Image 1 (cartoon, rainbow, N blue to C red):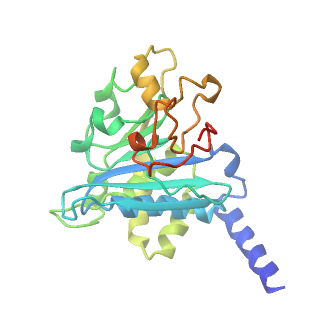
Image 2 (cartoon, rainbow, N blue to C red; image 1 turned 90 degrees about the vertical axis):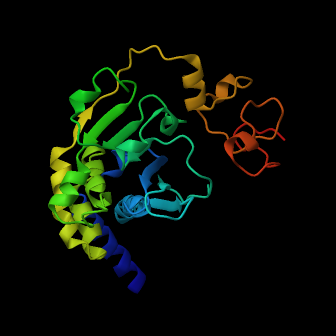
Length: 268
């Protein structure tokens, strides 16, 4: 009886967060997010906030960081996965559906490795979206001045501005997440002051839809899709780490543990 009451309350809360609408159907799942930032900007926390928002909407979420050199200003990566089912994949995110970049100095071709055409890219920058005309048109591309917003709300210090909550606010707008879900998540974590920054970012983010008429180099397409040329029917499916010599994407190339059969290609 207690469990039924708890489940009923959880369902009621999720309905309130979504404004009475089921937000799950329009979210393409499974979903993989990769966050790039620098130490001190809150990149790992940004990934955790995204995971918690989705979790509060009734989805399964997984998140973890890849710190590298543990010092302020050093590049940091963090990852989030979202699905309707329990998530068993513990690898890093190599082909993100959504890419969040907290520091514009990190933005370049290298950071786009594995990002497929049509993926969402959100960049923190003082430049307007018009400044990127003619560039990155194969992606859904969005810009927001998260640094300026965070500084306005006094989040962080004069030396290190923490932009993660502003980025989450902008991200919510791009994927049609309800603002109530952001506010609830921030309130649970004691981040009431950051709600205003998230709202500002939500209102000011600029988005440009991806062009579908572009002819991309074959190497870029193959790298993004990671499909097996020996198994055309498996195109666009992600290899979990194939050790078969016929597969052009072995475990070692993906940074995975070698000697693991590929669940997608069904090769040993």
